[in-house]
Image (cartoon, rainbow, N blue to C red; front, side, top):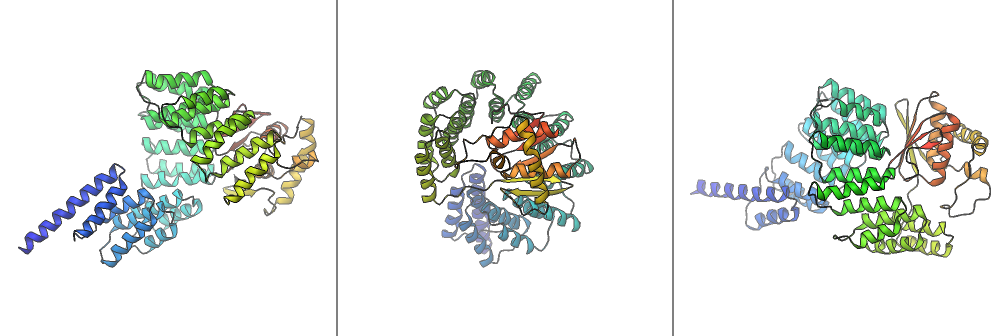
Length: 520
């Protein structure tokens, strides 16, 4: 009889675990958690195989509170953990942005294998702890644990977070050494790393060497071209993809529409949007509509973009209205900008960026009372504008600069370098672009030397690198109009290619021109 009860209990646990797993696989995380609590009410005790499933549900919801409760259940019941339970705990804590707790679980593991090291590295990367991820990767090797394919693809995003192309090349060599380079998943990760580090040429080399390409690999290369403003190349690859018999998916169309938008290819982009449903029977999602709004808006077709939104068969979200608001900033349209902002303040009340953009639109129009009102709204909500920060990698070391940064040990040389450029830039035709500056600028030369972080990083790059070497910068905020014009002229005066990555795209400055053609 006792054996029968044990078998019955085991079957109940297995049944509930299967139901919870099925819910998790379909993204029904709350239902999975409900089944876990139902088990407890029924007196059915979860085992060490059940906890990874329910922890996955907490991770999917990023619900740190419930995750901690389940961790407490594991400890209270004295459940014998294993690498799967521990890794599930680490993943839950990382998804809940509690990396310290994840590291604590990792440190307390009886045995740290490639799975647990990879989970810890991935957790650091997901939370933006690039240096810690890199340190963990090094510790893993010192411990004699050999990284696998998943480890290497997990650590690659560190390179674009740190704007460290040379580090990425080292990881690429590691991948070649371990003979993972022919894997399409690894190739996609490498393409993503190279494009985000500013080297679309290296990304193409990786893509070109893969003989069996899946749709994800094609998508990676298309989005890479788009980010760099190579819209025609992205379209060429899109055509080649279809000629080779690879059917584009909904992600492909997001990337190709975005590529057309960043290159001002309005007609081509609209044709791609039409063929999506006509030729491939893919119903556009909200993100596709947002891309079309961005496409129309950047080209200056603001009325058409607004009408397009109003006729959408889907409810427009913050991304759609945000694309229109950004276009209104570019083309100085207050009326439509106000309409977009009004909706965004309801849809995304805690998004500081929308308030900043609307404030800039008012400032451009000289409507200072409205600027003051928006700033008061921001103050009331406790918003603070993020300070600009730029990174540059020189001699395998990443250097970071803030606005007006004097903390760098070579700051005197950096500001002297900027000072030396002032007369040359004026002679080359520099005119201050002050429409987004919310204070009066009396001295043009002083404005040239304003210490925006990207200018400081570029000056440092000019000091520390040999003539002819491209300078690669990453910035956390959109490049302002004045810096954009200044960098174009610096590229001409200094005879350097300057590559700047901001949150939206890449800018390749050469001989006084930018690859974005002012579509950014």
